Length: 484
Image (cartoon, rainbow, N blue to C red; front, side, top):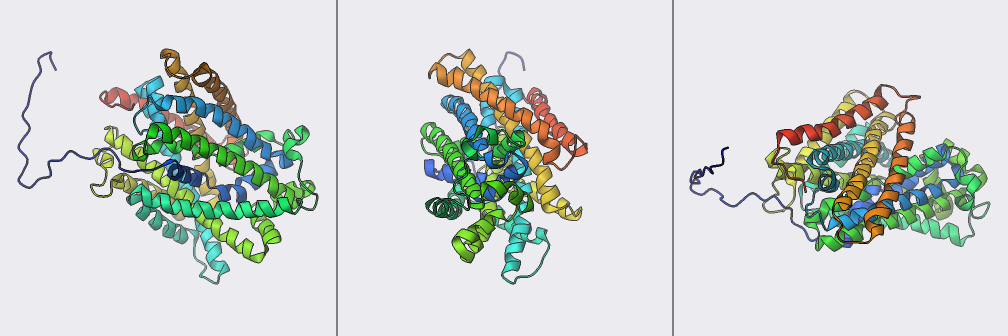
């Protein structure tokens, strides 16, 4: 267009047409507690104690594994210092990609958005590979029919889709109930073991013994610890639905992270103590999927074992629902900013929810589940593991990009906050994240079931690289897109 401004009168609306502007902001009144419930539910505390913890003990650093959670918590807290300091300068609800855009430009911001969307959708779909068999086993234990895993996954899928369509408040309340129940049973087990003086060998000391911490494969221990924290980073996704977001988001981030870190560290130490430090590696290696249930049964009786089995399934459901809510909001924000279809960026006129985006997220997940069933993939060893590999690399890449963006942003703008919050803590956090990223890349083949870099582990990296590179390409084509 030339320097002259051309004015075009819009056509008159048809009689009875809705002339109100499309809603591009979500409605909600989430407080710190509600966001913490959603985010911690995404981390799936009971699922972690029953899944990654035994794997970290078996294939990582054995009795020293709980210290891996301490390391991960410290690094992520350092990251959060800069992230929360920058929150006041990022008034949009685009989560980390808005931060990346603010610090590194629209191209990297869009690339980060595509990486995040891919990672969250992959993990949402992948966890159905755990949920389906878990629910099938639960139903069969009570005399129910023996049906394929994908039938039970479909049951959970329908429930998640229905809840995701509605306002976040309903999901928040349900997640609060499920989260309290799953955390409560683990805390009861922790208390019984602690007050009974530990297990057959007393209290485990590997947590504070340097030789145990560095024994075995500590890199694998760190890897499983990092995977256990996936979900904590999503607090900023709910900015539009939070009350007083400049305070709510930082508080929810710190509370979520510290709560998860303490819970994982203590509960993994108790699990080791309850089974005896000398035999825990062999036990976890032979029974990684049942060690939590058998331990609970030994200390809380048969009823405790049944409760853990039930809550393990509900924990996975809560995890899926949380990731669905996160993925839906990524789609909504990208639609509202004109990156994806504008229909995705319109909130439901009554519910104030990202209903269209939620349906789109469900459609993507449905395609992956149907493909897994049609190809007869093993739900855990292939479907969950492969998609988990995509998610683990994607989330740590997203955290690393955000950390770099925070440092660049404050290097350009000397405003607000101390030197510690603007420079020192973010730099230390970035160093830790780069180390985590290197560990994940070194161990990615093992994570996805390959002895060395093969078709799938290489494919994971190519797919994420393509998503990241797509950002600058789309940004050049759509110069009016604003992410921050």
